[in-house]
Image 1 (tube, helix red, strand yellow):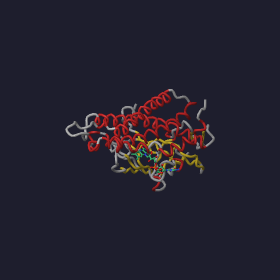
Image 2: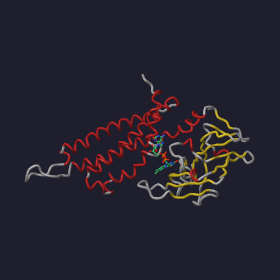
Image 3: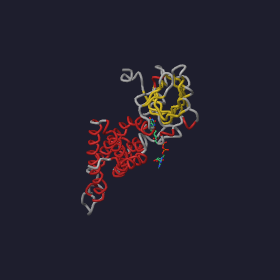
Image 4: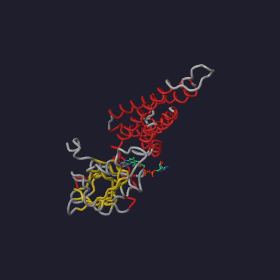
Length: 314
Ligand SMILES: Cc1cc2nc3c(=O)[nH]c(=O)nc-3n(C[C@H](O)[C@H](O)[C@H](O)COP(=O)(O)OP(=O)(O)OC[C@H]3O[C@@H](n4cnc5c(N)ncnc54)[C@H](O)[C@@H]3O)c2cc1C
């Protein structure tokens, strides 16, 4: 209930200054104190500061921290913990430091922040324990022995972010294409003969060749996005791997295409494309980040490549 009425406002603290794509290289360290039944979360060096955390700079009261979990001197890999970072009045909690990431090229409605943890203590129950747990006396427990598979299981819930980004990028392409085609259907430039009306932009073959293939591509992406939605809505434990591959490849290709489409549409609108009220140029700044967050596109395509052998052939 507290999350639904926003008295608890969450943020997601995975990326660090030193490690973004390489999540397994995160340097935040969590240990367990069996005397008090608490985890102790620490930022051991500057490169371990959490960076880019959306909602952290001003608003979030809680965060999910991704951290290495050290139990009895053994590193059990990256695990996730819930940590309160502000009280109900918005004051930052003791042993936590937060700084705004500063002005960005877009998405400035989101308060991205940097977070440092100075041996912050949280109850044992704050470990998100669907994949692994720690007993009150400090024993590490997981039904998944293989650390690679355990890491994959921890990351599996993040698929929804990629699904959403893939789908939403198609809407941005549609907005930009609708705007630039509407412009091309009203804007005239140059007459072929003296005293004749000027030619409609969309009657120029070059303008058609610029925009029509992008319309076709966007139709294809739209159908594919609907396929991804259905795949996700009807997901089963068996289909998780396929959804990982499809959502990763669609997220990367759709967002790359989207940026190409936004730029072409911006130019196709001439100077009007630069007015923020016409949205096309503005969308470029707002959505450029989609190729980087929730999995950098190139890294996602590397994973797709690696996993294609598992794709069902029949
Ligand atoms: C506006 C914004 C909001 C964000 N919100 C959040 C948030 O709420 N929570 C959160 O945890 N994180 C957030 N992030 C962080 C985001 O997820 C990371 O920026 C992203 O994972 C990439 O990590 P990085 O910036 O360290 O880039 P890097 O991993 O350093 O990558 C830099 C470049 O190197 C390339 N590269 C990296 N490794 C390889 C390789 N092996 N082979 C070839 N090329 C490689 C990449 O393709 C990329 O082009 C946000 C970022 C931004 C900009």
